[in-house]
Length: 152
Image (cartoon, rainbow, N blue to C red; front, top):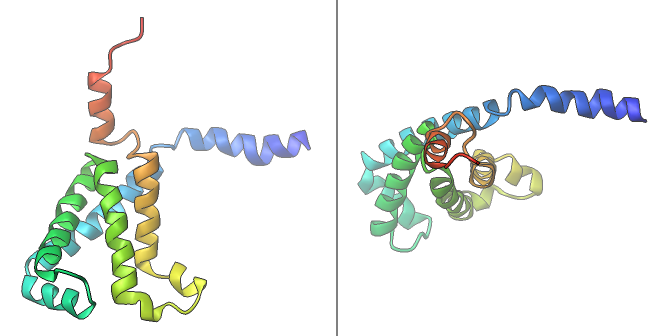
């Protein structure tokens, strides 16, 4: 049993430790790029976005549509940079929950259909980024390193 654990768990864990920076970077680039352009598109079509929000039953669409569009745009840029990652990933989780509930809920008839939604995948990535952080290839990481005092 010890050799199985060593070969199938310990060794991959040691290899993965060298690539720990890669997962958060790819996740941030993926959702950052998507949400940067989604937010930009919504900001450029605000009357239609407000009408969509109204049709989905989102309260105060005149306020929430510009807010969500700006959050997606600015959040997308900051996620690409890895700046204030946890701060922006958390509200984007709420945006995905509201999007699923208001615009897509009629499509959900099973756990499989819920988990198959792209918005649910984004929600999962935002949840991971908000708890695990942006990784070592990020401005958050560089800022934290720059203000830490060395141990004596």
